[in-house]
Image 1 (cartoon, rainbow, N blue to C red):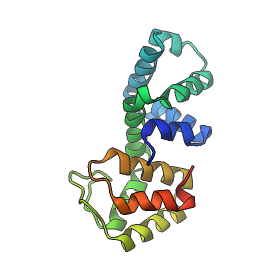
Image 2: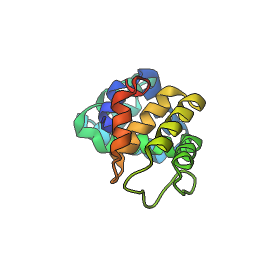
Image 3: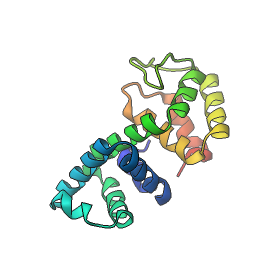
Image 4: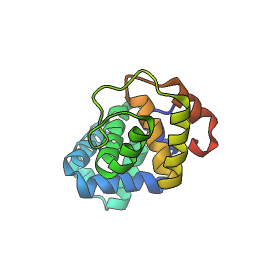
Length: 164
């Protein structure tokens, strides 16, 4: 299983840049919190990062988000991007495995799900949504939740379509 900072390290740089750009455009609070976390890790003031051209700033941010020390910031960024930018993917996944939700958000996850439903749902997600986004979502889902499903972990390890 890949952690959030590992996902930033392994995902295509264009996807990582899209995630930051989405936060910059649609969730300024999340973006600002991420800039502040990275500035703290780099021991610079946030204004130093703000003055950089956005493309250069984002490349540097991606490099820092792929470090273990910024796991929390990377996880928060991924959750925000998924919840605000990919609700239909989240809803399709939860509907497919038969879990009630509200706009892709669940209060209590079951300890496990049916293998057949999970496999069929993963196949349907890959057919309907961008493969890189599905990969990031499924890896994130299994590492960010208290209930880590062994059958999802197996699929993530064995299915080459879900590997970076």
